[in-house]
Amino acid sequence: MKHVQLNGYKIAALFACLGSFNLFASPRPNVIVIMSDDSGYADLGCYGGEIDTPHLDSLAQQGVRFKNFYNNGRCSPTRASLMTGHDAADVGFGAGTLGGHPTINRRGYDGILSYTVPTVAELMRDAGYETLMVGKWHLGGTHEIKTNQGAQRNWERQHPDRELTEEAIENDYNALPSERGFNQYFGLVSGESHLFYTENDGGKHRLLEGNKPAGKLPMTGTYTMNCLWPKDRDQSKRYPYTPNHGKTASAYYSTDGITDRAIRMINETNAAGDQPYFLYVAHRAPHLPLQAPQDLVDKYMSRYENFAQVEADRAAGVVREKLFPKDAAFRSEFGPGLKIPAEKKKELQLKYALHAAMMEKIDENVGKLVAAIKETGELENTLIFYFSDNGAASHVGDMMNSPYYGCKGLKWEGAIKTHCIASWPKVIQPDTITDSIGWVGDILPTCLELAGTTYPETFRGVKTSELEGRSIVPVLKGQEIAPHEFLFSNNKGNQSVIFKGRWKLLIEPGWYAHTSKVPGIQYELYDMEKDPAEKTNLSQQNPELVQQLSAACEEWQRKCNIIDHGEYLRISKEIRKR
Ligand SMILES: [Ca+2]
Image 1 (cartoon, rainbow, N blue to C red):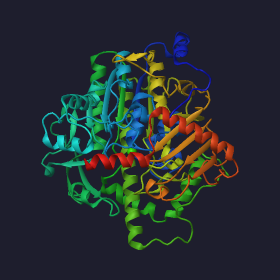
Image 2: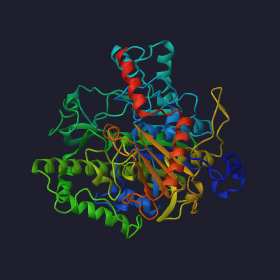
Image 3: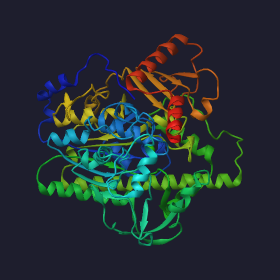
Image 4: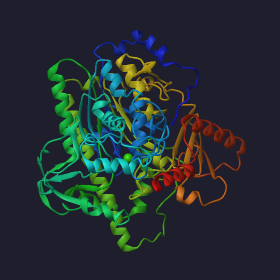
């Protein structure tokens, strides 16, 4: 996604005014970004949903909720913009998510975070913050490529047109979170893994501590484990993800484990002195594989007996929470009279219950983290963001994104709009809602403003380009800010343009495998103020606006070096043949 600045507003000018911000006189706030993985807009109680999230609701009560906060609709692209404040394609993620398809030797399609574009962690560290991260990275990098033949073969599969030279090895190593500004890191560098680990697994895991394999994981909890690999997914992955299913054992559960590790990092930082910290907690839930404690899954099964009712309740819930207009329509996945075969219904019910159970575990851990910060006496001056990297994925489908339409990987609001809470008791007016639009790329400039630092003109000897994100500090202070003039987004041939927060053009919306078979270019145009759930396509009535936004999107793609997805597939195929 891209932000084009509206009125020549310059970050530098803002920093010049920083001295007048008594609010931000020392000490500077700690900043924490908590991100879930594949969670729907109304998954939180405070966003109108049926899942029990008391701790997130309480975070919202002491902070501000965004009605309209955008991510990039997929794991890696969102993380790329979060880390850099730039479009994902500008920093190596033009092809969408890392893994599953080859990266190509073309700027924008590296599948590895650009080493010459600074990360928020590098800039916060340089500004005097301690920088801490736990959880999923998914921006490239491996520690073992130097020595492990399996890792080398994997790299070669991902880069069929390149040679694994010393330089390539070095580049890959340099993409690890500990090489990108995080003084402390514990977690999963790739995109998908178990949530449960037990002694029976032989202690095998791929988690890192800094740049090295983490040692034995603390099996501090006893869990009865529900591990489902859905029947509609790649069955070659079923085995590795399900051996613990149905067993009760001492285990490591990632959602609990990374939070414990984060709390330890905070306490150690505080024991060492007064340094403020920037902490990034990247949960690997409720992403596949679906794994959660059985007692929570049992609790939620009864809540997902009537899908149409849950869907309607979610739509009513966002209205009740004043996050969605009262009279606006939404598209229903489970309208009255829809018949679902009994077996399919049962599996879907179980998937919903697992998704909900994984969310409740995240909520419990947000509560644990907030309580730990409170104990340090620094909660008042700690800014906490909570949001999801993209909407719920197709295995749970549109209902989990209701009242919005579509799922992860697509460009309708169900994929790219997330709940977002910001809490900072010292500054934010409690229990407020903002209409201002936020984007994940706004986090970096926001952090820089709070740290009292500026975006560098050069980094590692290379001239930087202007940030696409803009600071949302005014929103935290209770002001509304102008929308980004344009937010662009691309994923495998389906694209969206949001113009001045109001008009949204979708170009070839849907899965590429389907849209590429239909002749001509399909457009959908929506008035997001009147029709936030994208129900009435206005493209036929507004051909000039369609043309204007479509031309702007083309120009953006040229600038970001995004190529036609058919061309990308053709190049990938050619490379594979070599
Ligand atoms: Ca994700």
